[in-house]
Amino acid sequence: SLKSLAALTSSRKYADMIARTKPRVDISLDTAHWAEGFLLQEESKSKRSLMHRYETGCKLVEKLDAHVDPEAQKALLVMFIWLRFAALRQLVINENYNVKPREISSAQRKLILLVEKLAASNYPLALHIFRMLFSTLGTAAEGDVGQRIRDEILVLQRNNDCKGGMMEEWHQKLHNNSSPDDIVICEALLEYVNTCPRMDVSVYWKHLEEHGIDKKRLLSYDRAIHNEPRFRPDQCEGLKRDLKAYLKTLKQVFSGGDLESSISRCLGYQASLLKGTKTTVDPVSVLVGNPRLVSLLQAIQRVYALIEFSD
Image (cartoon, rainbow, N blue to C red; front, side, top):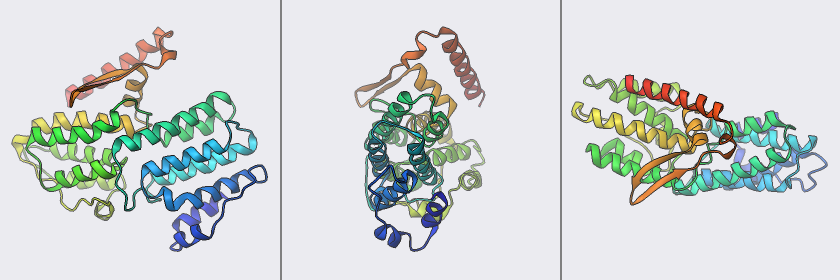
């Protein structure tokens, strides 16, 4: 079943196969096949945007009826592979559809909370599956963190005199088709800025390619990125500061495996005022009664701060 899913997603006739595939109705007969059929049937909708993909995941989890028996675990494994394929860019994550970052983060949060509910009611059964599932998702950012992706790039451009070229193309992508790829793009821009005053743009391309993004990938976005960045040495100090801050915002939404953003999510944090609003994320309640763990996490945060200062 899982091998056939991999074969289907790499086939040239993938869309035709999806159209001909009908999901099984009886979950109990063969849960893995049922989940595979359901996801394939929904793929024509799922590929429109990350929001649609997360919404499809919500439908699948809801159909499991908050009960994970040994058979239903197979459905979660199929779902993990489906999400993992998307994370590895083996599935389309945007096609002819514009979606706001806050809409993506809202759908993402709903899916994470549904999976969390399943995990809580079935602990420790299938714990390893839930861990794998969470690794393919973000951190379930609360409040307006998703909206800040849209707002902060405008502030970054205005503060650093970079409103044209590649930065404008990236700005349009962020507003309409934001995705985990933007973490890699932001990191690549930081690599480029760190070569100041030489301004060696080859490090930008090197970082992108090392993380699976090439020129063809950049051009494939609905809001394509055609140009490479061109910054002046006098822009570097401000760009370095603001891109680092922006990278944290992107990771708060899209990175489920980043230790620094995960610690911030657990301990809680506040983001500065933006368009008259301040983002406040409360600490995870279970940590309140564990001062030793809080102290350890805070120590790790201080290490990250020292590393950032040394850069």
